[in-house]
Image (cartoon, rainbow over all chains, first blue to last red; front, top):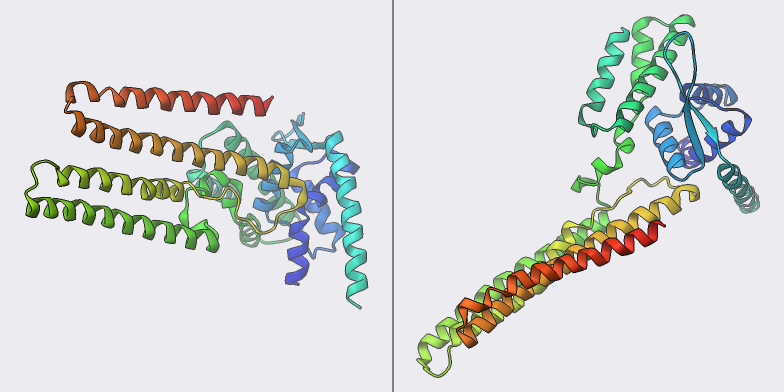
Length: 107
Length: 229
């Protein structure tokens, strides 16, 4: 399990970008989706999630805006930028290559 | 219970820099924690369990404020910490050596009673010269804080980190240059003063050093601006 969570943590940024490719989202929603997709096996720590947001924003891969909820508190939404999409595609290809290689090496 | 969550965040952010960004982040995290809490209670968890779970899922917030972490010596990687210790030990050793040289020359001069040549002053100048390297070393050691210490880095943010790393390095270089300027000024001051005995003029070295320092700073900020454009 520790290998799994280490690898997952190392790909936090890519996981976030992948979610934002589907639709704009906010912090808790992304974490909920991650839990749903992994059958409640994996949940990001909030500190990890928000520091990843910060890094992605500083790198210009995502942008944020405040939602216009009429009820309840306003949420801060995140959206992927063109550069983010490009970075994600490169990242995914690299991951695919690494995965193939490890599959070949760990028989 | 919700008030407790809010208080917990207040506590976490008590040490955070009081910037607009940090306040926004706090607001955002509180909102998401509340959402999670509501969901868990709606799912049938007890309020106590939901609170515990929400608080535990926050994790290590220090990674949210890297600028704060930089000031903490304990976050230096093992390798840098050792290098730093070696640098400081060597610097202290050289200071002691400088002191020994100074007193040694003084003693020597006193024994010789040589009226043509002042060994004590020569000793002072040499001792000051010996002090240059350890001063530079100490300044460098004080500036070698890393700007990221997390192991789980990914390629995507590497570039951004590199930029920050370089700027930190540049800061260290700039401080080293400043210390060189001032130590040199001090040595020159004594050297020229003792050889010429024109004390009423030699103090001018210090304003000149200040001027040189300003020029260096200007050069650095010009270069920084260019990098940003």
